[in-house]
Image (cartoon, rainbow, N blue to C red; front, side, top):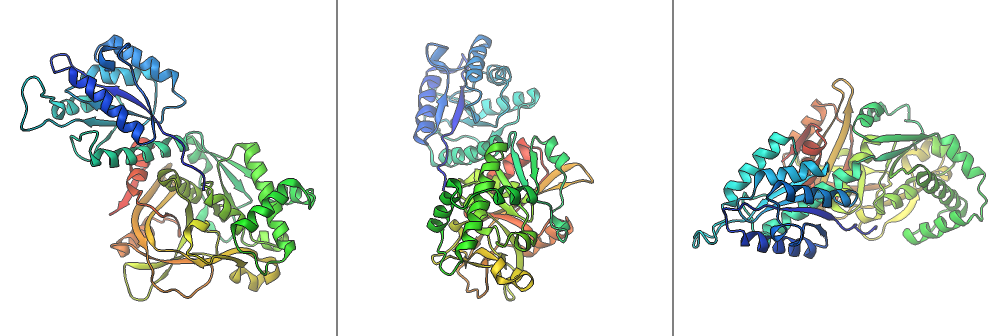
Length: 472
């Protein structure tokens, strides 16, 4: 899997003159220590730039804004820390003047109830409300810590910083995102129709390429092509290929090499691929392993040209830093109303499986096009663990992107089937299923081994302005 990149935060340290300003000094030092201990980088004024490196006057706001502008490409989010009441105007002016449109987290440090003398009383509890009120007036979107006041060294703030980092990764990851749409939507899959124009209005572009172009480039590629041979070695190192014909493996390798090259040329970050059944009838393999490898490397790839589906996968992967899969809400599991079977046939990332995953052929399509044309699926059972799920869709009637998120778990319940499948348990699942059907959402859902519904919901509903349902 790809390594998670380092986060960078712009820090605004609030200070107000009639409160103990030595608290601003220690507060700045503490927030820097905590941010760096989390592996992130802090961009913050120093004592030479303003009093204690805090922001109070308009001139200090200007200096802070200029510093943030210099690092605009790096900064993922802004953290406002209030070691005392804080100068509300100075804080919001610094953010507005910076021109940054990134998530903002507001933290306030608690007072000690056993020592509230004039020398150490913070009043951050009150100052946070004034800060948020001004952000509302300025039209600045902001997020809040779990508790109204939290010490930056506390476990609560550590968890909130992790949550906020996920929010920032999602918002930044979707900025100017390009999705590769490889092939046409299969005629039998009306359910994955979507609006490119609505995506474009959200700053998300779709680059299409026809399967004829993909196959044409493959036909021009020599068997000993370096990129194809490198992909072949990667496939054999990724999954057991015993019993798979060499000719099929070479086709998969060329397919993967061509897709990789095209995505780099077009600056596409994620992809959605046509499979059913053109790939099998006219090329002779399924693209599952190639797609699985991309998803496992945090470059999600969805089948049936489900572009909103791969967006859903990508948002979960950005939040967690781990691979996502696209699954079908597929079967009931006995009579348990809170369990179901999630399945695909399968291109699941290897990260999802128990030990023993292997390459096989596509059992369903084989009956139509022949087993020899369907090699390349990943066969195995999904491991147990926490599960976050998400689905986004374009609504052409209202011109919006909308979605739902929630959490549950993959279980160890026995399952005797084919493809890639696992049993999922979700509290109040019947309510969720009613919601999906009543709102006309697709049968595809993105899943991730994490508990990241909260940051996905925050990023989508607050910073992207997408109507969201959170199944709790």
